[in-house]
Image 1 (tube, rainbow, N blue to C red):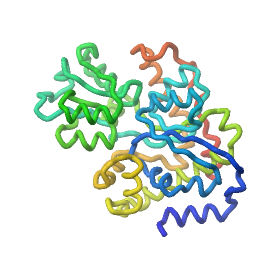
Image 2 (cartoon, one colour):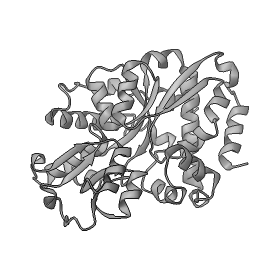
Image 3 (cartoon, rainbow, N blue to C red):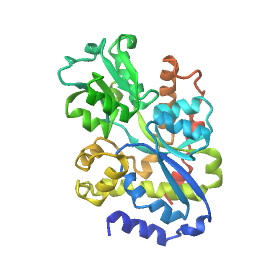
Length: 331
């Protein structure tokens, strides 16, 4: 039995909510193709086994798609980047961020095609860059151009979802992309990294992250379920942090991540290493759910408004951040 499953069994033996948590409860969780430890718990059906809920996982192509699904009510919980979360909150969507899935760091990068002649950001003028609009990589694309004093109108920025970007790159239809794994790993094979979200964050102080958000109405009615979910998220991340050397291409963990995300198993260990996964203690700290995430969402919203992506910015984004279940999971 793996360290993660042993730890999960231990959690279940002490005050397990189990099937007694709720009978006949159902939830739809939207996820994307990000390469994160949580995929292993998804594949192991850890949340279903712990809570007794009927869970449907729905894979969507972008954070914007996740936000739309939350708005329509077709999903109750979803993974999205800080840019689409900021966009959703700015438009009055009744959701709240309750878990930082990852600090993106160097897991999103601006890659230019080999032979394109692009060596600096200034060389991007007139080139075709594909990004998923209203995503964290879209935000950092525009921010990078702004920092380099390049008019974004001088660059052909194309709105594409990750699978579309992979296909366009193969066809030679685009010169560059700012994207995450598994597409990032694929385009690196015939391209080179110009900059990363980690570098842009260090230069500007405006970091990006992926988070898990929930419909507020669902949250109010399913408090114990969310606490259980946070415990599993925390445990899976902790297992990865403590046992990185064991998460190799032929391990059960990495095979599961590859299956769920669509990545190549051989690429997963290197992809995981590009992210930072905050601990349960860090989640509730001032750096993240205790204040930092709200500040990041506010800065992101301001930028999106300046770009015309949203119409208004909230006076305070802490209304869309809730550390309740992180605190409960810690006890």
